[in-house]
View 1 (tube, rainbow, N blue to C red):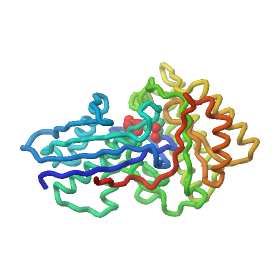
View 2 (cartoon, protein in one colour):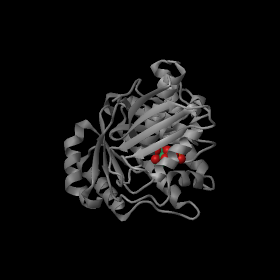
View 3 (spheres, rainbow, N blue to C red):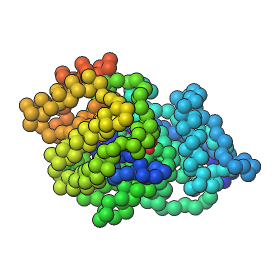
View 4 (cartoon, rainbow, N blue to C red):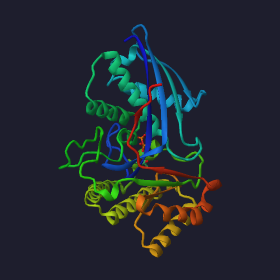
Length: 348
Ligand code: DP6
C-alpha cells in the first residue's frame, strides 16, 4: 500500500517487581512483573504516505493537538531505533497525533503508554506496507519487542492483566527481548485488581528514568538489587499462581523500598519521595493493622503512591482513601484506575 492509517489506544502499567538497571541496550538487569492499567492510557493515530527512497522516515508530530518539542524528540529517537527492525519505515512520511487520557501534569510516567501505542501503530503500518500478515500472537510479540527499544516498561503494556518481562529459567517464552502475559494459571484472587494512584506531587521528576538507570551502573549495591529482583520476580509469579496475596504484598512493598533505597545509595544520593508520601505510607500501615485487610502499595521513580487491591475490598479502600489519604494529595488529586485487557485498535 502507498498510503494508509492506523490508530491504537495503549495503557500504562504499574510494576510490582521493578525494572531498574540495564545490562546492555534496553536489556533489563532483572525480570520485572507488572499489572496493566485501563484509564491511564495514550491514543496514537498515524497516517503514512510512501515517499522516494530515503535514509530515514520523516514525520509531523502533534501532542494533544499541539507541537511538543520534548515528545517529538523522544518519538524521533524511537523511530531511529525502530528502523533496524522495520526497514520499510525509511520510505515513509508519517503524520503522528497522540494524546494522553491522564492529566499532563499528574506526575504519571507516560512513556509506557505512549511508546507502546507508537510501537503498535508502526507494526501495523509495517504489516500494511510489506503485506506480511503475521498471526495475532506474532503481531503483539513484535510490538512488545519494538516497544522495549523505545522504553523498557512499554514492552509490558502490550498485554493486559499481569505481565512478565525478562528471562526466567523454567518459564516458557520468558525473554529479555519482549514481555509475555501471565494469564495462564492466574489465581482468581488476582483478577480485577484496582490501582488507586495518590498524586502527591505532579511536578516534573528531578531525575528521569533513563538518568536513574544510568546511575545504577555505578551503584555499589546493584548486584544485590538485581539478585533480589530475580528472586522477587519468581516469588511474585508463584504468588499470582497460588493466590498468595500476602506474598505478593511482601514482594511489592520490598521492591518499592529497594527501588527508593537505590536512589539514596547513589553518588550523589537523591530522594524522590515527599513528606506526604511518608505520611500516606504510615496511614496505610496503620489501616492495614487495624482493618486486617490484605492489599499492597508501591511507588515508581517518583513520590506518588499506588494502592493495589482486589475488587472484594473496593468499598473499604475507597472510603479509606477519601477519609484519610486525599488530604495528603496535591489538590486532592487521585486517579482511580483498574486492571485492563491491554491495548485496543481504535481505527476511526
Ligand atoms: C521505576 O521503562 O521508563 O517505572 O527503558 O529507560 O525508558 P527506559 O526506562 P523506563 O523505566 C521504568 C522504571 C520504573 C520501574 C518499572 O516500571 O519497572
